Image (cartoon, rainbow, N blue to C red; front, side, top):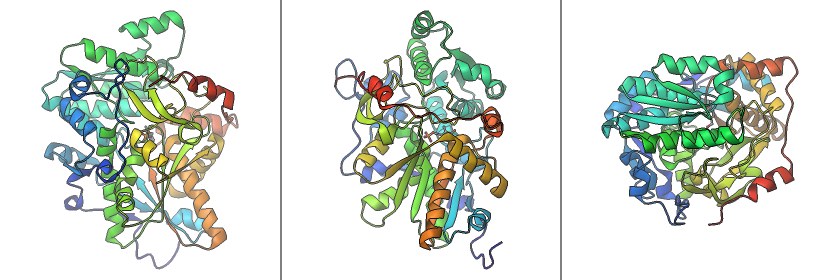
Amino acid sequence: MKENTAIPYKIYLEESEMPKAWYNVRADMKKKPAPLVNPGTGKPMTAAELEAVFCADLVKQELDNDTREFPIPDDIRNFYKMYRPSPLVRAYCLEEKLGTPAHIYYKFEGNNTSGSHKLNSAIAQAYYAKKQGLKGITTETGAGQWGTALSMASAYLDLDLIVYMVKVSYEQKPFRREVMRTYGSRVIASPSDTTNVGRKILEEFPGTGGSLGCAISEAVEYAVTHEGYRYVLGSVLNQVLLHQSVIGLETKAALDKYGIKADTIIGCAGGGSNLGGLIAPFMGQKLRGEADYDIVAVEPASCPSFTRGTYAYDFCDTGKICPLAKMYTLGSSFMPSPIHAGGLRYHGMSPILSELFDQKQMRAISVEQTEVFKAAQMFARIEGILPAPESSHAIKAAIDEALKCKETGEAKNIVFGLTGTGYFDMVAYGQFNDGKMSDFIPSDADIAKSIAQLPKV
Ligand SMILES: *Cc1c(COP(=O)(O)O)cnc(C)c1O
């Protein structure tokens, strides 16, 4: 172990130091993210249109580009206190193993039963649904982390929850499914015969394993055709990034407590919610010209929205019933290879992060999955935590950055988001352990094919 460790292994905040308001990074953006657009009219979605699908308070948050701070209601703060503040860990053991002069920190969001950061937004969305007097909410889940988080939040608030779970995951991840049912949710394998869009897809592609985009379409259709229900979404949207700012605010408070200035901030990017939350207050400083940071999004080489996508309006779902969002996208018909096991499979990216990336306020890299699992294995053995494959994209990038510092001799402060644990991903780990994992990189032609189907706006 390194001597002279004035900085503890874990920097905890007191309850009283927890954020009292979420931070809305859009308030500090001169050029705002593009608005959601109604595919029927080609005009920006109005609050009234959005309220048919989403909860009213969440629509206000979604559309508000100017309010810098949103106070966190006491009920949500009290729920947060059950599993937050989350620790910021100094990765002393990893630093030693790598022999790097860099200082590595990670914000660990896996310390709750759902095992990921998604609970931060799940409780907020369930709270506003309950406040509105709704009977219930609907959503989709792929691997199951979001569905699990929302199940916990809905159980806590005594709210009905219907989860459309991508059929392959429903069949191959029975443990997640049963966690959700234990918390009282109704879990339906998608595509299903409970919706028009589900029935249509089943007819066209009998035996399909489903997709996230299809599950979204089903969940939205159920919500808009049943009285007292609304749809909620676990990533991509502005409101989700707002709630997830609690990650970055805590990280910044912990660093400030010890006078540490981050140099590089790294996060994995699927729909962009954990990364958007982690970087929010730092990006705010950067946009206001108060500080500079190297901000890095890490995505899988098999689903490379930032690094090989197009910045354009696209559908958020395969069924094409959701509003259009302007984002870095591979096209809504893009399907990552089924051999890709590492999560982060969404075709698009948060409009906020897309705009910041377009403005070159951050950069993006892609990594291949066997490299990601190698980093995950190393991290598990050295730091003790068994990381989620998604989170391991950030681990891989942080290790590479630390190794660069070894070459240059720079003692950079590297901060990365460790979004969750991988206990439910042991099939993927098994493939890796058996040496049966391979990498898949889509060809330019694969991507061009789905890009050609972008809507004309
Ligand atoms: C869902 C998830 C992600 C990716 O989602 P983002 O919205 O991009 O944050 C990353 N890590 C874990 C553990 C997840 O569950």
